[in-house]
Amino acid sequence: MKKAVNFKMMLLAFGLFAGLVSAQKISSNNVKTTVSGTSTLHDWTMTSTAGTFSGTVSGNTITDVKYVLGSKTLKSGKGPMDNNAYKAIQADKFPSITFTATSVNIGKGTITGKLTVTNVTKTVEFPVAVAKNGNSYTINGTESIKMSDYGITPPSFMMNTVKTGDDIKVTVNVVAQ
Image (cartoon, rainbow, N blue to C red; front, side, top):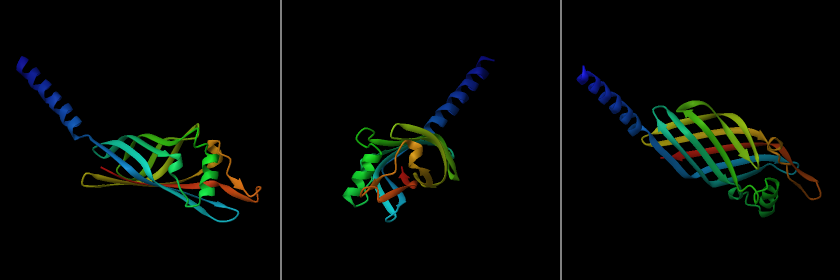
């Protein structure tokens, strides 16, 4: 009887160890993020490749998802526009935009998590595509949000003659290993 209990304990321990060994930590330090919107003058786009991503892969799921973007890494190529954007999102006071999620499945689906911009955190849900290629994972997602939902007054300039629209589209492209 004692040998049977010991054998079961060894199997359980092996199963737990195998589960821990198969978990793969993944990360990326060059996540591409694009934010685009409209204004009364022209459409605009800001891009960053300085975002970071981390997670843990186990089976068909990535858990402990974390994405961080430095607010001032978003660039339009137009200094005055960048400065207006940084002022609107209070980039000096809130230098990071973050997204965290418990998990996302590999394949096409939806991810639900917490997006923090300025000092406002909201639960968001958006479509993503997660593909595995060897030990590399590609994650692509796009969602539209309202700046005002995060306490941001859409920027305006030239004595309010040019106004930015409230709706913006955020696209995130991750390749993590």
